[in-house]
Length: 492
Image 1 (cartoon, rainbow, N blue to C red):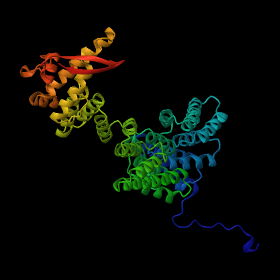
Image 2: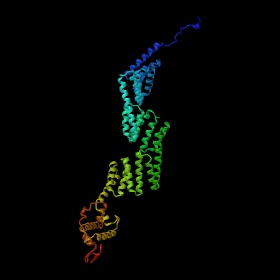
Image 3: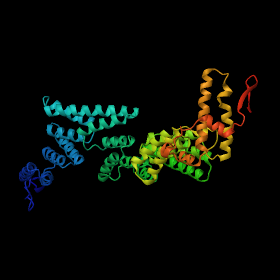
Image 4: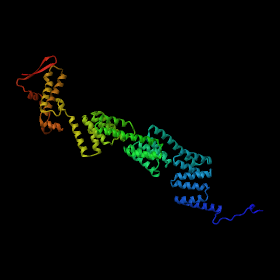
């Protein structure tokens, strides 16, 4: 027989290990890995399972064990790859399917998880773990479904609730965390939202969704310049990120319109500034802090244009959006003072002083309280029909006119009701004159002090005596009719 036709036994290469020895070594590594796993030394367990896989790369259980170890180490994506490899090598490997399902579920892919648990139930119909895990996967799918509906409805609190429940089953799902963070931002809970986004960025600095949420928080906190930078970064990572694109466009438009309005205000173009702030308020109703500032700015413009009620409404809208916005309270309080709505002004200044106990705020509150006190007294200037800056002669002229107008003798032929009313007015005119014609009393009245102090009781006078003293009565005086409804005053 020719040499080429014969089976020639080849000698093993020096150092070569037989297949049986290799399997034995691999099993030994697996057992060592199991021992470290039992001691919760997962790093060493991982190393020994890897050695076993290196020797026998087609053993499903080795991948299954390493998948379990990676799961304990929190490396779910790597664990998923090992579990998938295990079931590729052995489609009947129940633990492999269970671990793959658990990884999918923890990562938030509830649909894929459900398929894995269904596979286990096909292999073992009474597998209690698979039954329980399948229910968990179905619960997560339901939370996702409800959250999607509620997000469209704008019920962001409900979405946060659903995501919190889903994250109990899928604790490392970035998608659920991002949706929760976005809703927290939309609810104004910026520190909570930023915390969630920052946690994700620490693990994955290129996560476009997390970058978008960070930008959204800054945008809603009126840090628009920084927000734009995060939106641009998100778009670099994911050019088709529609939410980041829209937010970036809104942020730039809002910044530009607000700055334009500020310029117009500084230039004294108040009508134009009012219009620009109005346009800015239409850009994004969800941006609460920026819109609060825009309302307050427009309120300031309104006060400059003497549209006091509009200014008060704008400041009120600013406060509704941000009830900690002191500048809006200050502006509204001043508008209330300007329109003599002193009770409302006192309420605002009290709120301001409770928040910021400064000397300036204390003085503003005292001034408002004084004006309120003064407003509750008789307005002697109004009774005489003169300004607060009226001179002594103007006060005398006003008294002469009003005293003659309301003197009881002039209305002797009127009904008892009219006589009573005119007598009351006549007394008030005398009272007003007695205070405003006396420099000391007038000064106390103007400063808001009580006139009863130091024996200056404003009620200690007789209106008729004041009338006689003012007009004099050398021969008496009388009111006579000179025609229907016409009277004249005649000295005797």
